[in-house]
Length: 137
Image (cartoon, rainbow, N blue to C red; front, top):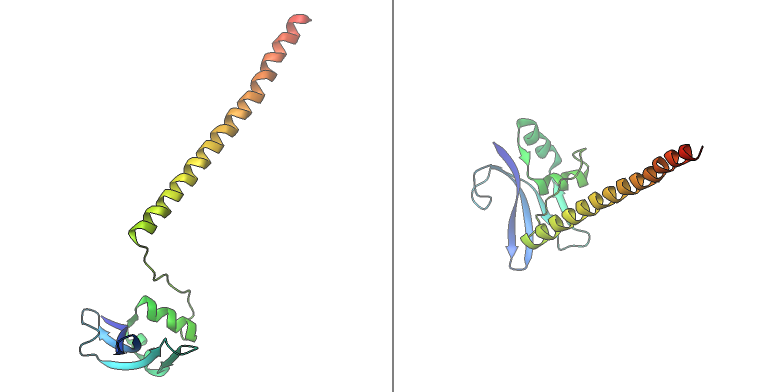
């Protein structure tokens, strides 16, 4: 299976990326089938140079872009799709997010229990008051 991947080139602390057509299992720094673009994130605004004709050809043949390349193609207007989430959370952030979700679930359950108890409390005095009135009559 073919992939459209980014391959970093350039000097230390001065990255420039190439968009390459590569076999999925191959190393992006090794041999590649074709260079179809460049990306320089250091310029303002970042320079994205794409060979749209060749990218469309390779995608028609079955090449799949990586998530980052997919987002670049969406930004460039070559693909009409939603952007994909590419960031991965660290262990501490995952644990914090899981704890926040658990706390929210617990608070929701407590609120539902309090609401149910309040409804039962309102219903109970009304039921007790009705027999007392019948006894007086």
